[in-house]
Length: 126
Image (cartoon, rainbow, N blue to C red; front, side, top):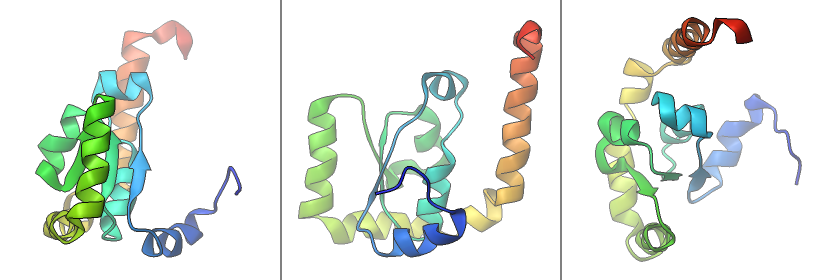
C-alpha cells in the first residue's frame, strides 16, 4: 500500500470499495471544514464513515455515518454490514448534490475562504 495515490485513480479505488473511512484534522473540525474525501467518495456513490463533524449532518443529513466514540464507530460498522442497502440508499439521495453544490471549483473557493479567515485570525503565521 502506498501513502500517495494519484487523484485520477481515486474513482476506480472508490468504485471497488464498499465504504471509506474519513477523519478530520483538529483545526478542520474547529473551523467546520469538511474533508474533501467525503465529497469525492459520495460523488462516486460510496458510503462514508467519518469522525463527528457537525457540518457533515448540515450538508448531507444521515448519508454520512458519523462517530464520536468507539461504541458509535462500532454502530457505524454494524450499519454497513447489517443494513448496507439502506446505507447505500441514503448515499444515493445526496449524489446529485455534489456536482450541483460541491464541485471542485466550489470546494476550492471554500478552501480559499478558510485560508483567508486563518490569515485574518493569525496574520503572523502567513
